[in-house]
Amino acid sequence: MPNTKKLTWKDIIDDVVTVSSNIENVDAIITVGRGGNIPGTMLGYKMGVKHIVNFSVQSYNDDKTATNIRIQQKPDFTSLKNKKVLVVDDLSDKGTTLKYISDVLEQHNIYATYCTLYIKNKTKFIPTFYVKEFNSDVWIEFPWDDLSSLS
Image (cartoon, rainbow, N blue to C red; front, side, top):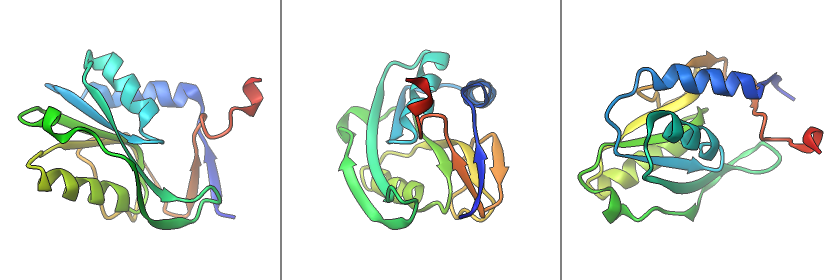
């Protein structure tokens, strides 16, 4: 089992506020489901962006092992044409998911800016905006990963 960094809701809120201060002029947000849905929605509220769509791409199994890219849901690409689009995910780990999304968006002539709260030091996709970097051997545990303590 790798080292684990357990993040709190306060960490997430603070980091969303921090990263939002560097981002301007966004017309639409694509959240990368599932992990990017929560920070993407929070950024939408913070930045006043109401056009938020989901691009659900899965590259990890529930047992935390990497898999091939599996598409769960795609946005309506025509609604994003000629918009300033921000793609939001929680983490750029290896960069596979964000690279895939970048390639798909470019095929549809949508040129987006990318934002994650965190990156790993060996990622192959570094977003324009991020808050913190972690070593690649650290497993990041987000507060929404296990909600059993809330019940």
